Image (cartoon, rainbow, N blue to C red; front, side, top):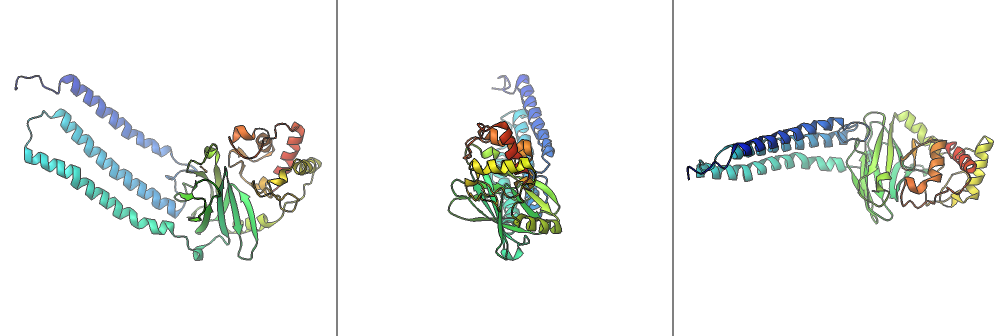
Length: 348
Ligand code: CUA
């Protein structure tokens, strides 16, 4: 037996070295996570909840790295060490220690660290409501219906945009009429499912002003990937002004093109699905457009706000959002589409 060729030939060792080098390169690739910052990243937290989640993520990553290094070390040991030289008692200790003891200790420690985080993250008592309004978000196919209800009974609706004051916790009431969506603003909080037939709760808190991107985090149909929204964290005074402005009805269009656009908007039947408060348009199927011109984006943050964006949306509705319930208005004369766009953009 002693004269049998060594199982771990030079070629095999070279292969093992290449594998280890590849594994190290993958670990270095984790450094690319640094690219994950910006307005939609759980690794660039802008609020206390997101910060807790990011800390937990880094602890879990640390734990995973320790496990990875240990496994790689054991792999190297197994590859470079010839068989037949092992003490049975030591081997058993190795298997029990590495296979049962260490995973149990590491996973229990992470569990004990992570579990107590959950209740505060799910806390959303109304007493803490710093928004001065109840905020309801409904996941529609495929956009976000946002309703604010003020203590004095006033209410308004908008779409694909939430505004919150900086430094206070804003509880949310979430639901969906048909399919399951998930509400997620990675920079501010964890995700929460929106389930037909029940109301789920979440909360948002930002500790600095800014614009953060949210997305649907549960596959919900053909335009799932086009279901995004903005959360704008504002200084309290600016937020209070915004609340007042949103309650106002739409201003009557000033210039002749916008007025022509308004007439076309009504004659084409847009008001059957959309509401423009202060006008005859009272539809509730689609987004409320009362102040659509003041929003950061349109079509669930698929297009930038502006005359060009509206025109593109009206003409290419189904290419931009496959399966959307709104019909495309590509058959309407370009000049008329332009006029409607001017009208919509003017709804500040
Ligand atoms: Cu809504 Cu995915």
